[in-house]
Length: 404
Ligand SMILES: *Cc1c(COP(=O)(O)O)cnc(C)c1O
Image (cartoon, rainbow, N blue to C red):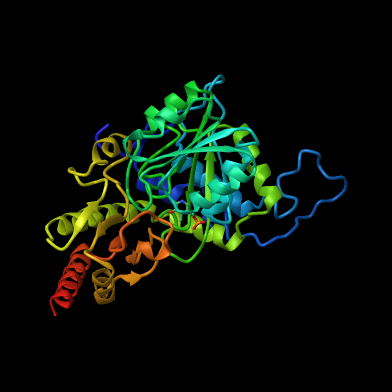
């Protein structure tokens, strides 16, 4: 096999990630039907006679929706492609994906469906800032929470007796990386389940289930859908049993995605490979530009060969897709504000992964342990040269402001 991004299909053909992304989750072609059926807007479905005790495929809109089903299949195909050829009779059951109204809903579904009073969870002490609030809530429910940083696999010594290990790699916003294979093996030895927040990498950049995780979850609000116009989350579960737990949680808290958002998300997957590849190339070029600037420190991007995260990232991430985020530090708050104000192609906005570049002074939220000049920069799909030129002129303008 020449290109390592190719998958061998049942018929022995090689298919790359771009091909898989445009076809993911599509139903079998049917005459006079659209390729991707439109959103199904339904609170309830015709249900004549007695209710099927097994729930029927589509009964009530909080339980299931045909538009969810197609997106869930698509995400499973991308997170965990099936082995080529017909499944062997003794092969393990296929993973299943459950979609949610947001990434936060997906996070909560894993944490609260798996951890009970008296259990212990091991969380990162860095990572997405909502984890702090979730930790407090878990503790309030009588769950013990241990935390350690993502970098250096520092969660490893805390697994004794744990029920769930939560990893976020690369972590947001500091871009540290941990070795999923190593941590998952150690957690399984302790009988713990492993969840990986795959938001930053996307399923084309990293496949947590193949690295040993039991759950791969993400905020679909970010790079997976990539247009900054919807909120969505999902959890891909290693077994149908784990998926049933997560689905039951979705039903009871009602954190369900709207059919329109779900359909838009599916439509956006077609360009996932184009977007993440362009973003990865530009992000690395931006990180290199920043390294050469005397006014910039603390440049982090897992694709930089000199980055502390690079060795592990190179082993477990796919095809140089190290993500769209570059983080770095400007001398102080005023300098960082001048930089953000001078950018013309980049909005001062939170979130990341969109087709339009954004950047923000992350300390403004107060939730992350970062210096006040810390910038989280999310690279869009603009032409690389245009974006680099804009950053260069904004850095110059911000430095001139310091001199005057
Ligand atoms: C944004 C984000 C979330 C939460 O997702 P929402 O869609 O905003 O609810 C979870 N994890 C990571 C790493 C994120 O960046």
